Image 1 (tube, one colour):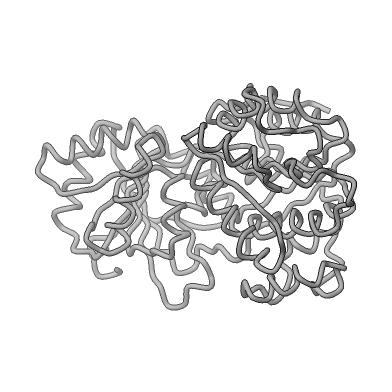
Image 2: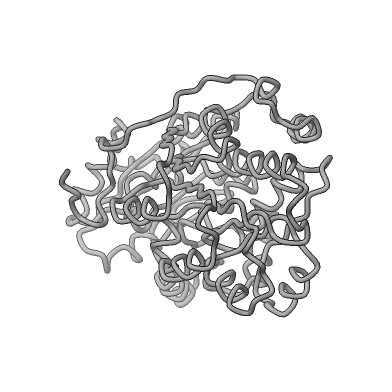
Length: 402
């Protein structure tokens, strides 16, 4: 088989090796206290990912799940880890970590831990999300934790300092591995795997699966089950999409300022591809006397939390951010009337996670403006073809659509 370019997504080469078979949690042979937690968490029926992934994972199989909704994946893998802990044998030293979850960011690790805590509310399972204070993390881990979560770099640092005993680890989850690759965590992941038992179960979740990521993960796995679930909950319905043609990249800021002056909106999110671009755009808007706030993953956590609280409360009206942080905003339930893609996404499959509305959000409307240079028309056409949608030129009365 021609493996193609490293960054090429496998697309049609992907083949599911698991079909949905169980559509009821009661038929999955889950622990009774886990079933109580699932019900209390408000999950009534298994998702498509639940149906395809829980069975093989609980059987100890390695698994690669390609799924667009990371929220759906969070609950699935929380259920998997909790079920495995509920059935662990008494021979293991319960003070030692049983499951390790690697995430792309601190925020993702926190969200995953919250899912574990809430769904495992009726179970005696301990978890810890490792953050920036390594000394504090080490002290907690020395007392014994069932599930450890964190970014590859931080977890690797802790393992190198010995307090995290990996000898009895049963399962490792690589959560959003494509994003971890793009952030330079590949070497840290390799380093972590060099310290793990050869028998460890490997579970991988990724929204996209470029060939280099697929080949890397398969080298770490044994005959993995392949699962692909398209998120039918995220939809472009209700999102009015338009393009704003800009001859050259350097003209985008002027165009944005013109829009800022003409549109009266409650809240807007402006998405850039990199933290550096966010800083540059925020500085440029500020110099032109436009009031905006900004957040991205390279900022200190306290500053990010403050900015998020202000935007969520409505005291901040226009937020410039990255794709990653925009997704954190959607998870908080904030649904701004306007989303501006100052940069088009580098991967077409990320477009819907930027601008797609959840089907559960009844009656919400969203206008999406895509800034497109002459050289980016091909990228936009690729997005249109992939989602079978048409993105028209922005009308003069766009403000009336919000």
